[in-house]
Length: 88
Image (cartoon, rainbow, N blue to C red; front, side, top):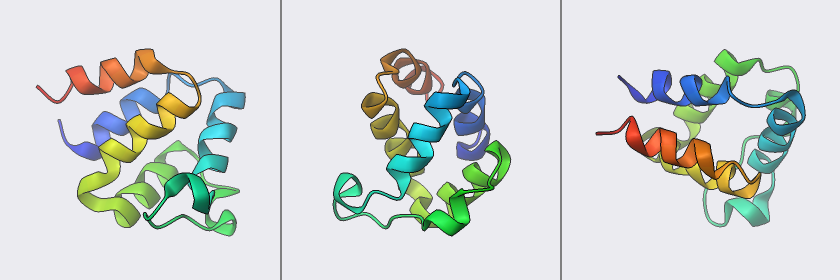
């Protein structure tokens, strides 16, 4: 399973409020510490499919690690574990 599919498979587990927090964190320059952030105008109307594409375009090889970092921030460590399990 590729990065795109792995990330999308985990995002579907988020509640609407968690998805909003996930997106909000992507535009937070201080949280992303050294990584590029995705501008709000690109995130506002992005559905899950567009969001995954934006993340892959922005973070490339790091997209799965960025996703894990964001899941930890929104207290979804269960998804961090699930995403880690899909890599093996």
